[in-house]
Length: 311
Image 1 (tube, rainbow, N blue to C red):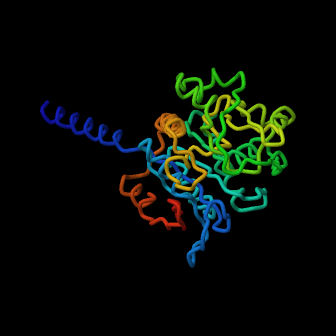
Image 2 (image 1 turned 45 degrees about the horizontal axis):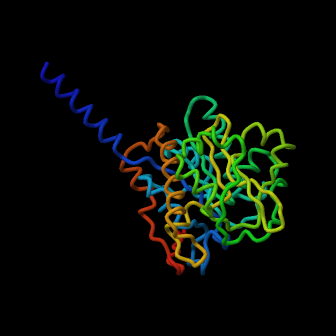
Image 3 (image 1 turned 90 degrees about the vertical axis):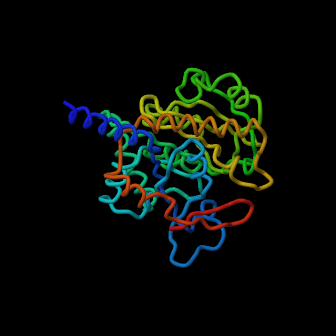
């Protein structure tokens, strides 16, 4: 009886340790030639990258990060997909094309997440800026929905124009009165883009309309309306055209450092962390996880508080 009790305590303790280890988000790398993702001179031999601000944004919500190489073969992608608890698609300035290896890798991971979630395997996705456009194009099966004609939305913080679906959405519906006010009345969401997806694209593309609901829109300086926040109707997919990760972790002059902006950034990270914690994916061992984590890489300083991970 004593040995059974000891075994039970051991199992319970092991379970408690396992649950205390922070979930892991995989970040898909960008080609090193992508200037808004990498910036600065590319170190010799490095072919891919992403900004450290995405890592820090996730870490503020007690999440860990593993890089997913966009050049990885399907076997490696399958292994990483089964090990991480979510995938993040970063911002950047790529001209997305189905012929590019980056897009093809994103398509492969996206398709696995769609089919996996539909079969009950919870796997959240998040897209920011370029990642927002990427998720939209993948859902629509059409890159022509991305329009790179927006004016005056480089380095600008603006409030969101909420749609009727926002207040009942999973992502924004539970924001609370203070965050809702910051989002809707204060210039708290950072825009750094000239590309976007128009509300009309959701109307005319049945694939996009079926998968995503539009939670907010914004306008450029010429009055053109673009979508700025969306979430999956049934799938745990979330995306912002704006950058929640820049606020606390970049030090350029055009980055908002007000309390309202910081609170919005923290809110989005916390919300995503709640979704990530629902995934049961895991590495074969904690040793295997530690060998894959971002802590095995040193970021390169680019100035103004801007660090980039090169791979």
